[in-house]
Length: 155
Image (cartoon, rainbow, N blue to C red; front, top):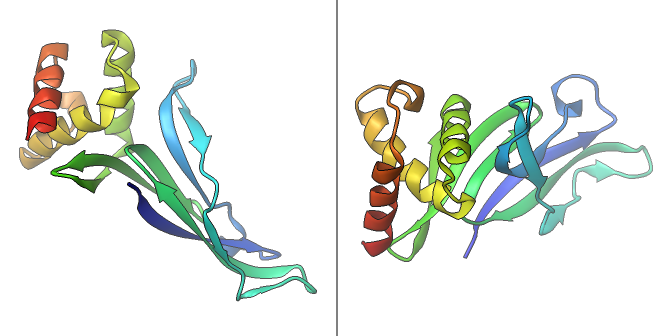
C-alpha cells in the first residue's frame, strides 16, 4: 500500500524552477539536530516538458510513499507528512517540522521504535492540534504514546 506524490524538477533554470526538489523519508535526527533522510526514487517520470537537446526544462516525478514521516520538497517549498494506516487505508497528515523534531527527540530519549512513530504522531498531534498547541508544549509520556498506538492499531 502506498500514496502517490508528484514533484516537479527542473534543469537549466535560474530562480525558483532551478531550486532542488526531492521526496525523502525522515528517519531521525543527526547529532547536530538536522533531519536524517532516506531519499525516495521516482516510480514514474513524465519527461514531456524537458528538452534534452537544450539541456533545459522541467519534468514530473511520481513517488510512492508508505507509512512513515516524509518530507516533500518542491523547489525549496517543503511539506511534511505523516503517513499511517487506519481502517485498512493509508492516511496522510500534514505536520509542522518543529513537531517532528520534538517527536524524534521523544523517540530517541524514550526508545520508541521508528515503526511506531507515525501512529504515535498521528494520534497525539491530532489531539494536540485540536487544542491549538504544538507537541513541544505538551510533553508526552511513553505510556501515553504506547496506549495511543495500541488504540489506533486495534481500531
